[in-house]
Image (cartoon, helix red, strand yellow):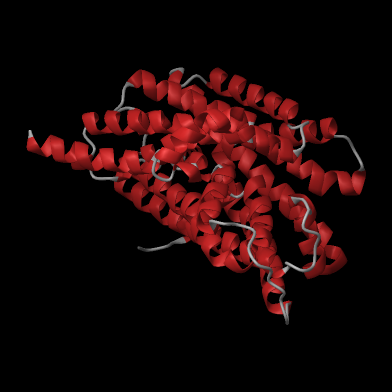
Length: 423
């Protein structure tokens, strides 16, 4: 695989659209609580927050269409409903969360302004970028993303190499690997892969790049670079969080831990660096989400530029409204949505990566239906019905780990392929 300048620019752009609020806040506290089990947590986190999203980019490279193509083998109607759900979740949860994080960590500590002002200015700027979407790859890949990567890497390196006698606490987790895997859901990276992967494809087409094989190699190469960058940052931040086990109170919040780590590693200027990092990381993700949503609506409206404009404006307004809630509230609200849509997204990504001979329409439909059915108990448990579904989850493989859907989906995939070949 050859990496040229264009691949690096696209790779950095993809990295910046992935790396947002959750990606920045979740790993340090996860590592802090993981303690001496930090390695297992990294492995679990990497599967749901790096490997699956990377496969999502590979699927886009193979399809080179829109997100509608991800579920088209089930049915056009199902595909449309799935896409609408994903985009609706994206513009009402992870996108506004970026504004909330930016306010709490980068604006309020310095200027004392309220959340309304921050989110309004924030999404006005997001809208300006989205309306100039032809320049997105260049702006994100050449300028914003390298700054993000360098600042985060600085915090990680100083944390690791300046700690002479790190005090790593015992782990708080009974199943650190599973905890890392499920926490990776909160990054929204698998959903991000199917959303922002489409942004890369549309951006290439706008630039006049219509050679299928060339674009496939470019998308795969940029995905690999983005995946490597994400893994380095995630692993580094989880391990750094574990190293600070004795330096902070056990009840510390995600934002306070990240602020404390930057202060201890970069000194008083650390707050300034962190503010820049938070603002850039969150902003680039919001731009990617809103652009992807606007692209999708434009596509189903026969290429209407007015539909693109209206969608971008509505998504930005929703960002302002939802951005008023604090970060922890948005994360809690997101859990039910993630428990339902994430398993389905993961399965769709896997099915689209597999060769066509293993994913006939019948196999596709059956595996998707089974995944949805076995995701329902986890979803019901996440909305306060845990007592009602607990007996069911205990009888299902991996049910107690909120992964009741996994084995049934994989077994169905194998059985249906055997059944199809036997006919």
